[in-house]
Length: 236
Image (cartoon, rainbow, N blue to C red; front, side):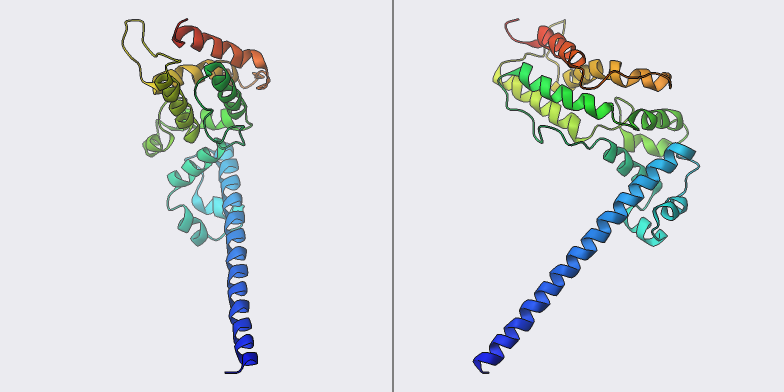
């Protein structure tokens, strides 16, 4: 094979590789767009009609995808609902990972502000009300939504728990209960998030006319941080 032939052959190979990458990128884009439409359609229909009265066929129609495409990604309605709730708890936060241990006031302040913005997102209270209303009749949702604040907080809760564990190991926090027993970091995480939820989320579950405070209001998180540090900071 001449040099020219080899160059041409190499060019064909490169072009084939480029075409394959372009095709793969196109399919990935379509896949992502389909997923976004499915999640958005499912959330809107669940909130408008309820979980029980919403079918996967209705969601597929609303999302403008085939039922085959929908079932391939989400084989059951419970799996799709899990994806909807997980999406609700995704947020661009300041720390993709927990802050380094050593200054619990700094770390809890930043994590608390991220969480305040998270629970105040539009639709969060409505999803929580939906779960509370339908869970007794839909036991298959129990494993999906988990326990705690009526909706799964997923990786966010894990991030806070791991951060509190790191602070305890660094000796800055000591999670002893009133009777002197050591509490797990997960229990303290529940306490911290509960103080924030009590002002931003929980009142919305029973009062549809409740207007929550601005999640950027420093006072809400400041109080939660101060109470936690007063209770658990070593040397306090």
